[in-house]
Image (cartoon, rainbow, N blue to C red):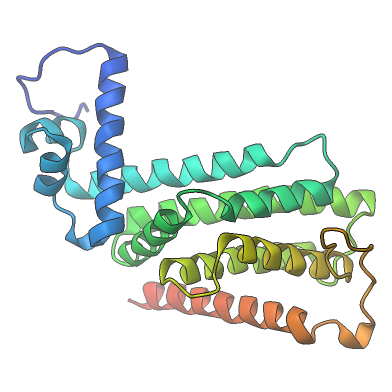
Length: 255
């Protein structure tokens, strides 16, 4: 069954339709980052887009549909950009470093981090948005898992934990660092975060300290040292973050 749309809209070619819809989605993302997802209304988006509410409803049946599509497009764009950084012709370690750097060294990181927090909060009360969020999480996990799998098969990586656990830890760390960026933690700069992510990945996947510019090859950590110091912090933070996610999902199921 076809969904009815408001009539009276001028006929436009597909390219112009796509451009106008994209402009509306961009405005929506700006408003969500500035005001919060719950505070954004169709009239706000219409005013900032320079169109009427009626025209806006031709493209989107409801406010919730608009918010969901804005998130879905934003998430796909970020994942696609990060994927492009992982040159398949490079070594697994180089690919992993490139992906981790690309996840943080983005001009729109501050806004992107704020959007992620807003959409996660909104998803607690919107099942369809929550499913989109889960799909984004899986896309990040699959992207990292492919690189970890390649490195493990070639012997470049010798994970201290099961590969799927390492991947879950890395995704949790990326999430946690984006939260730090969103709330303006003083030392949560993109460069510092990218370096810490590479340190954590190297320790988890090789038991070595990461290379530093101009430095020497990393030394494998003694067994007693693994899980202590910085590595212990990373693992503990990832485990706590994962537990919070699991707790939230249990509350949603109970509710």
